[in-house]
Amino acid sequence: MRDPRLEQLAGLMLNHSMKIKRGEAFHISADVAGLPLIKAILRQAARMGALAQVELTSQEVSRLILEMYDPEDDGTTAAFLADKAQSDIRRFANLVGDIVIRAYPNDQELAGIAPEVLQLSALQSKPFKDLLIGQRRWVLFEYPTPAQAQKMNMSFDRFFDFVLDVSSVDYQAMQRNAERLKILMEKTDRVRIIAPGTDLAFSIRGMPAIPCCGEFNIPDGECFTAPVRESVQGHITFNTPSNYWGRTFHDIRLDFADGKIVQASAGGQTDFLNKILDSDAGARWIGEFALGFNPLIREPFCNTLFDEKICGSFHFTPGSCYAEAPNGNESAIHWDLVQIQRPEYGGGEIWFDDKLIRKDGLFTIPELLALNP
Image (cartoon, rainbow, N blue to C red; front, side, top):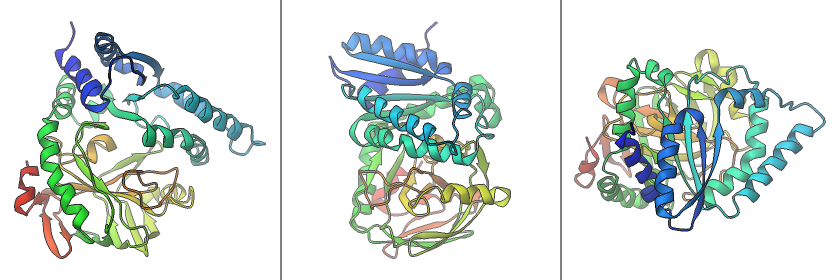
C-alpha cells in the first residue's frame, strides 16, 4: 500500500522545492533505501510531463569506492576524480537540478577512511558541487532508517512518522514569518552571542540573509547569512554532537582571532578535527551563520540536516560560504556546527547591535515572536 504522506512529500519536493515544469528534466541521486519515495516522485513527475534521471547509491558502495583512492599515487586518482567532476558537469548541462535522498544505515561507515582520501575527494568534486549548489535547483532529504531510529531511542515506525511530520510543516507560513528575520538581519551590523563556553562577536554588515523554508532542505527552518570574513572574535563551544567525514565529534570548541580559527579542540577527536580544518586555506574561516526555528525539531540527531533546524539553535560553519551570502571564503569544507540555546541546554543570548533578539532559544522582539513554537 502506498503511504499518502510520501506522495505529499514528493509533491512538496517537485512543486515547492524544485518548481518543476512540464518538459523539464531533473536528476534524482538516492540511496536504495529511499526507493518508496523515489517511486512516488517518478509517478508525480510523469503526471506533470517532466523527465528524470535516477542514480542509485549505497553507503557501502561509496566506502568501497573511497577505499580505491590513493592520494599518494602519481596523480592518477586526482586526475580520475577531476575527470569525474567534469563528466558530472556535462551530464547536468540539460538538467534543471537534483533531488538528493540520503539514507544512513550506518553513520560510521566512513570511519576507517583516511582523512587525506576524504580531502582529495572533496577537493576534486568541488567544481561540480559549485555548479549544482550555485547554478541548479536542488533539495536534500534524508530517508529514515532503523539505525537512525535507534540513535534517537525510537521504534522505526515512530521515527518514520516523526521524520514525515517535521518535514511537512506549513512552509508558506514559515516563509512569511521568516521574512521579518531576514529584514532584521540585513539591517544588522554587530552580532554578539553569549552562552556557556561561548562569547563570540562578529559583523554581518552588508550581507544578504536567506530564509530557508523547504526550498533546499526538507525538513527546513533556518535563516542564514555569513559573517564579514575577518570580523569574528572570541570563542564558541558547541553543545550538540556532529558527524563529519565518518567521525562523531563532541564538545567542539573554536577560538577565533580576526576571523580565523586559531585553536580548535574536541576531546579525543582533536587531532582529526584539526586535520579537517587544515584541509585547505579556507577551512579555518567561517562561511555561514544561521538561526534555526523548526518548531517540531527539538533534540539533536547528530545529523546536520535535522540539527541545524532545531528550534532555539544557531549554527556557525567553518568552510565555504554560499553564493547567496558571499563573504569571499572558499573551501572544500562546509561544516555546520550547532549550538542549542534553550534552558535545558544551558541557555544563551543573541544580540543584534546591542539589542537582545533571542534569549534561551526564544525570540524576544515583537516582529519575531511568530517564529517561536
